[in-house]
Amino acid sequence: MINHVTLLVGNFERSKEFYSRALRPLGYRLLEQDRKLLIAVFGIEDVEGKRDFCIKAGGVKQKTNSLSCLAFTASGKRMVNDFYRAAIKAGGKDNGAPGYRKKYHPGYYAAFVLDPDGNNIEAVFDDPDPAK
Image (cartoon, rainbow, N blue to C red):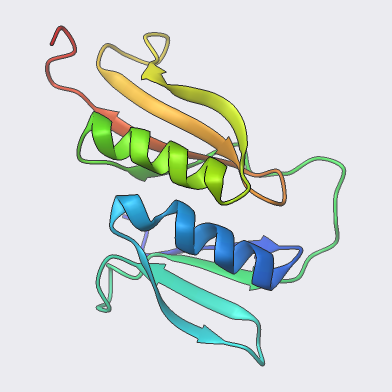
């Protein structure tokens, strides 16, 4: 089980604002930040295991990102849709509108957005009854 992930970002303030807005529909909020170290911690609750996503300024700008996809769990299709709209409104770029992705497996409902650094982020709901 993964405890948390830290993503290096090119512009800390821009990325902090983007993730604060984009992840809000998934129940995430900014739990902590250190402006000196330029790190921000996000999660659903401020307890170990629930504060699972961080951003940190740093890293050399690369031509391509090594991160293929960072997927966040959604509890329903509406949550996926809300994530997508919020991420686009926060400045993300469309990388796959909400919908079923049968190439992964039946019921895989997801949306993909590129963050300010070009990283592919996703919200996914595993629909137990995709026929509805």
